[in-house]
Image (cartoon, rainbow, N blue to C red; front, side, top):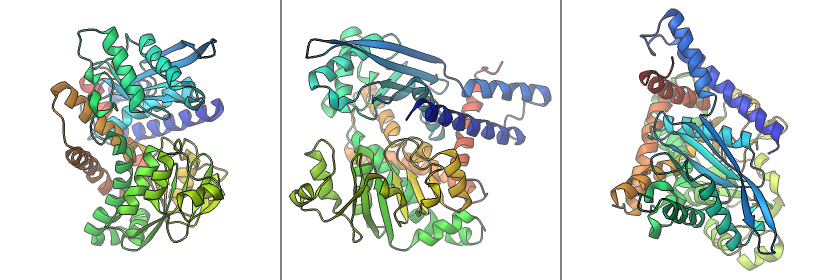
Amino acid sequence: MNILEVLALEEETKKIIQESLDALYEKKEFLPDLTNGERTQAFKSLSAIISTPNNIHKSFLRVPREDGTIERIPAYRVQHNDSLGPYKGGIRFYEGVNEEEVVNLAFLMTLKNALHQVPFGGGKGGIVINPRDYSEKELNIVSRKYVRYFADVIGPDKDIPAPDMGSGEREMDWMMAEYKKIHHGKPYLGSFTGKSVVNGGSLGRREATGKGVYFTFRYLIHDYAVAHKEHLENSGNPFANTALEHAERPLKMAVQGFGNVGSVAALEAYQCRALNNQVIAVSDRNVTLYNEDGLDIPSLIAFTSSNRGDLPKDAAELSESGIKAEIRGRDELLTLPVDVLFLAALEDQIRKDNMENIQAKIIVEGANAPTTRDADAYLSDKGVIIIPDILANAGGVIVSYLEWLQGRETQYHEESEVFRLLLEKMQETMDTILPQYFGDPYPLRENCFIHAVQRLSTVLHKQGKLY
């Protein structure tokens, strides 16, 4: 994503925040002790506080390469707001990272934690590299250097990083080891989450985001829609009509992105017995694979695990894998005639130039900000249900919280218990949000932002930070 696209995305997010504050301003039952001029002043303060980060940390990591050269790599740690708890957010290893993108992602993390009532604030990190261009030894040095450069601002009670695009448990293990070395004799298990199990990580952490993404879809379409069928039929709500149209019939699905999030969501759909799913298309950075009769998702996962995460990209690789599929262009997946589209790749995927070609009636955002504001408004006006990132992809941070707690208590849950607690937390959020969503004409994203901003604003007011 280039700088102009990032700035546009940041402006879109700020507009949504302001609209949420405007809606809350009109609700006299919200912060009722604030009246007249005092109320106006407080809401101006809220707008300024929520729309800007507390801290932006930037450095250039000095990294020796194996060819003998020295490279200076830009790196960031942005801390948006810690009113709800320590800063929390991933570290992105990606060549397209820039300061504005990291600021916006940290901002969204604050609201995601507020929405799901996870006691963390929002943070985010980034290192401007393509990890495929570095050896394992070089990535180890990059990871350790990142901790050294930001050692004073991260920690179990300050700011707790986690994996993000291009990073995983290996990098978190390296980083925690460096943190432990720097802060010898101090608690260190909670300094990073998303670690390997042997290093204090939680069982189920890798699958958590993808499982949560699929669960939000399944709960809305199956559990909630079926249980509240009569109410939804009488609501006159356009989104209720879409939910009911898809609640009890076979569904064709496409999954954009086949990494940790997309592959797990696809497998959940493939294995789901509550719904008659068919995943007919998946894509990655190279190709779209399509099979009208449904793809063999377990075989695709097995292939990618042995091929650096890549899907079969030509006839020879398809033959080798034994998978039946047509190879199509990478971006064709978005406009296929499917019922459900899972977005688990990058930002800004559905936008003004392709939104009119989207055929799916349900979109689930596994990635951060994959749908632009224009596209969200256009599709929502047509009754398309968009389950936004702030709601759908919170599985990672919820299980990160469980890992953080387990590290403090040095007691660990079985994987089944982790998944039970994860889905229980996400169901609790859905049960809070969905009645209002199906009771008014506003898109789900707007409902989620209003709830998140309301909680954050209440805490800021109670803490006396609006004066």
